[in-house]
Every structure is written in structure tokens, then in C-alpha cells.
Image 1 (cartoon, rainbow, N blue to C red):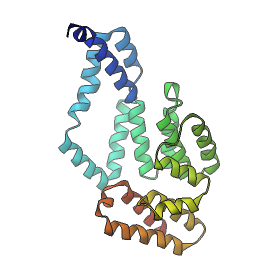
Image 2 (image 1 turned 135 degrees about the vertical axis):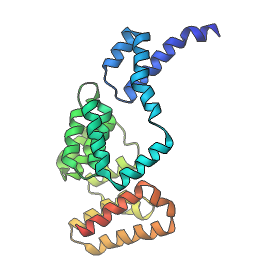
Image 3 (image 1 turned 180 degrees about the vertical axis):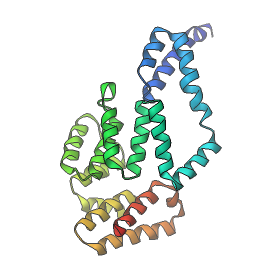
Image 4 (image 1 turned 30 degrees about the horizontal axis):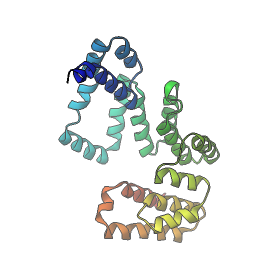
Length: 239
């Protein structure tokens, strides 16, 4: 028991260091915690960790989520204000994500690029988000080059990354198979956009109708990201 107590300060210090890196906090905190472990750790807990815990109230978060869904521009204004007060990598990434969701791709790209500096220059998550927004801007050649470099460093770990790879390599036959053999609406959106660019409106309608049939049959899909991709696909018809 005495050994555990003796190592407790070091365990706490390591936990705070992990929290700083994971949440992309300013690296100034690392220096403070390493060189002034007790004072630096206490200040970090009071200024960074405690406010996060207090703001994580589930009822408050639910209200904010509903409000932001109804009024996404309000979320962006809040995040813009947050970045002005605390220009951290984590806050800028949240704002870039909000820009991306609101189809403000140029602004999202600028922010992602500004985050890819120093210790975060090869950050896996940020690099992939940059590739996504390049594709959204139809900068396919640049996105291909970025993805090629990405794959030399990291494996494709999830369906989103695999689909983006297939999209950039224009393997829409395989993407279409994925859509019709699963409930992955992101694959459906990629197909719908491809068919729209080819002027094949009937195929676009087929994709959207399949999505709508799935939404009727599987109600839970409306509570997932699939519903967002369905709305994007519907937007293709009205644009």
C-alpha cells in the first residue's frame, strides 16, 4: 500500500500529461507539469479539467445538442468565440468540424491546415479531416496525394477511411455494393453524387429511394450519422 501512495503523484502527473496530449491542449501545460509538477498540476486541474467536468452535465449537453441541430450557425458563433478566447488545437478543430458540417469547406480547410503544425504536423485525425475537406472541395488530385502519403504512415482503420479511399480511386462499383449490402448511407451519398455528376438522375433517385425505404424499415437509422448522409443526398436533387 505504501508503494502505491509513493507512486501516486507520478501516476497523477502521467495522467495529466496524457490528458493534455489527447485533448490537444497548449504544450505550455506540459512544461508546467513537468518542471512544476505540483503547482502546475493543480493549476491545470482548476483551469482546464474542472471546467470541462462542470460543463459535461448531461441535461445541459442535450439542450445544446438540440439547439445546435436546429440552429447550426449558433454553434459556429459559440465556437468562434471560444477560439478567440482560447486558440487551442482542440478548439480550432471543433470549429473546423462545424464549418465542414455547414459546407463552409474553404474555412474548414484553412483551420485544419493551421492545426497541422509543430507536434501536430503528422496528427492522424487532422490529416484525414484535411483529406475529407479537400474531396468536398473537389480537389481530387490534391486529396489523392494527401491520402497516398497518409497510407504510408497509417492503416485505413474504419469504413469512413475505406470509403474515402475507394471514392478517390473512383471504384464506385464497389462503393455501390457496400451501400446496397449494408446500411452505410455515406457510401450511398458518394454514389448519388457520382451519378449526379454523370447526369444519371434516375440512378440518383434509386439511391435516395433505397435510403428512404431503409429509414422507414429501420427507425434507429434516424438517430445515426446515416440520416445526415441521407439529407446530403437529398440536397443533391434540389441543388
